Length: 45
Image (cartoon, rainbow, N blue to C red; front, side, top):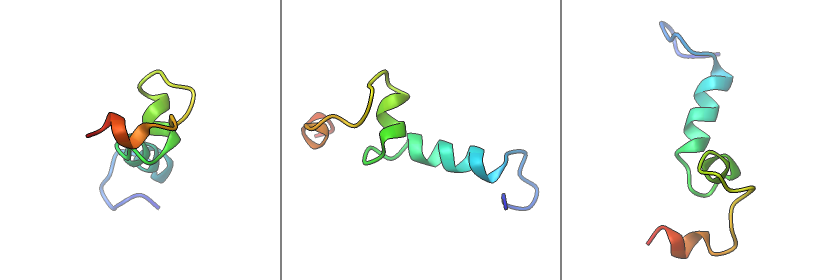
């Protein structure tokens, strides 16, 4: 369940959180990659 008073569903909030997490495929997909690249740790230094 989404936080009380939120205009967004839990799924929408989870997706937003995943897109901000560089350890998640959704982060990379939202930036044009197919999935998290093997060198993802080096790209964020």
